[in-house]
Length: 297
Image (cartoon, helix red, strand yellow):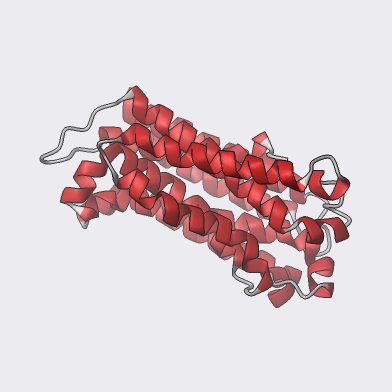
């Protein structure tokens, strides 16, 4: 029910934000690597992601049962019971909230844990009332790098709220990246969503229009990735990203162009290749390049 492959979407960006947070200078606060912070990020990511995906399966179980593409999922097929998934969701939620205590005495992660859960759980209802559900999903994953930054640099953010701006820039890049590829993925359900009067960008704009908007979102992602290293000229700390990062941004742009060439309005057979393979390289590649640039080279 909880696909490990989906971890590649948010976790690398949370870890990249943490690396950025460890190396960025802070005028009056000492920022240092702590194993408890790394463990806290991993525990919170696992707990939040598991809770959100299980809750989504609960809320969508009747829709999934009627959709041929999702009818074999664990709840519709009877492989799991509703009671088991409810218990799993509760346990995962407790793990997430408990994980924020690993950052104490920095209280910011614990303070934002409930609003974060509201965003994560709220996504499951969005297709029922808005075509912007894809952007809500992007917002949910955007929180990963921002919350990782708050966990590492909470005291610096309390002293200077603008300290968090590099993570906000990275988070916005994630928002447009996720929103774009979710629109591409949703094209598979265009006929079903239209028949059941569910809201999505493909239903609202058509498959061709959704693919065009997804391309715009991915272009905005590249613009935001370009902005992150130069943001310190206006706001936030300097990160010191160099040529390895710029090479990764250029490679990301090339990969996203390739992703859009894989999928056409009249041929959606390669959506899963675009969804999983290309996006895995994008997220993991940016993490590796950013880490090398900041810690090694």
